[in-house]
Image (tube, rainbow, N blue to C red; front, top):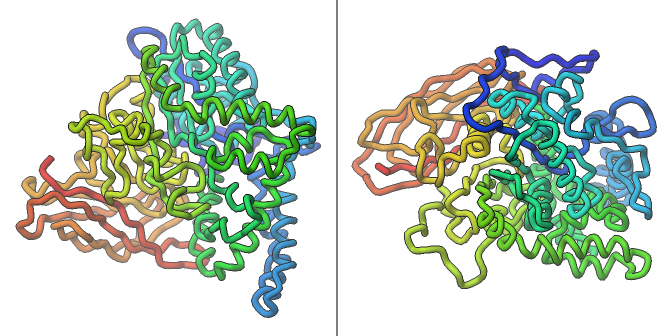
Length: 572
């Protein structure tokens, strides 16, 4: 595989894209296939022009900003530690927020404070082939990686990315999506389209369906749908920072993976006093959210529906904010409270629906009921449950339970067509080649039909990214099931990093009747270390456990890491 060029002298980010094959893909047999990607919030606006002609995505300069503000943070931290005085630390958080998120500010009229222009607009300019030829991919993006995967299968001219300003809210953006899809069919001549949404993009698609769209849609894959909103707003309800249990390691994980950097900041964050990071984070988030709540419908579209009425009453004036309230009411009293009905109606129309969820990996909000601060882990990590008291047929129960027994999707609306990806940051399953391949297969082929039908895809796949350092995969079959009757299984520990070497120290098995061979070695980027898993003991009952790899990544600060992945032991 070769790396894609970045025309126009654009700086290359080595971890951004994996290339499609040199030879153009063979067109699939049958009707023309056209796929449209509706990305999430971060990827929806590819470029912000902050009053200058230079392309400056607001998140690209975050590292420089951290360095620039580091002195203020250290002074504030020292003052907080010595004198219990957090004022300087709070000032740092507010200043950081103003600069980092200032480009997203809106006026009371709902217009951008800074001239805003998305890189691509219109179907012809939004195809994978056109964007790539112009060298306009951002430094991050679910849309970029997913588009590359799909382009390798059906051709770049048949893959489109819908780019939008999420601050306008799902109602407005969904109307733009309707027009965009019509333009795509006009440009391509396709009779049907396949849609792939991620995070906020899933809300946009749901609103599009709710408004009567979908007549020419064949299949939809929802990747980490954010139908439940985010818990980050809850800390604003009573101006009580303790209600926002912000986690230092979580924040750095979001930065590391959402921004596409291979910085692995988590170990460094764990060295900082938690209360200092929490204090700064609260000041930063509060400053950023309060500024947007007054003018941006899109922030209200991210708000958890359970918090909406209380937040609206507190922060919005019925007269001054009448136009904003009308838009936010339309989203919350409409699609967000009718997701089960919307999806059921789509299935009745003949649209095939699939969902790929994460397992509620604790992230920014860090509390038990909102695992990653974006989607609700209590409802199957974003899955919409059936009404209280209703259950699926008995034969479906217990067949979609995650390895750690935390999530039982038998209550979810789409249990037969739902995969749970273990360990992924919200919406970021594109890091994982197997998961990305699964999404493409579901979108383009509609197979497998249920989570139980194809052993090539485990129901609960471990996601990983370069920042994770290593992963462990069984060889021979892409699954997470160990069968003692088959004897020893071969596996590999792989260095997922695209830039850094890792020193594997050991591997251990916990909760499974297996032992693992000695694992130790220095791995270059992309290298693998073979290991053997041998049955041990006479136990035949199904079991769930994990295999943990201890390693050191060759960072400036070489800290010890532990990467654990779940497996199931049984004959079925």
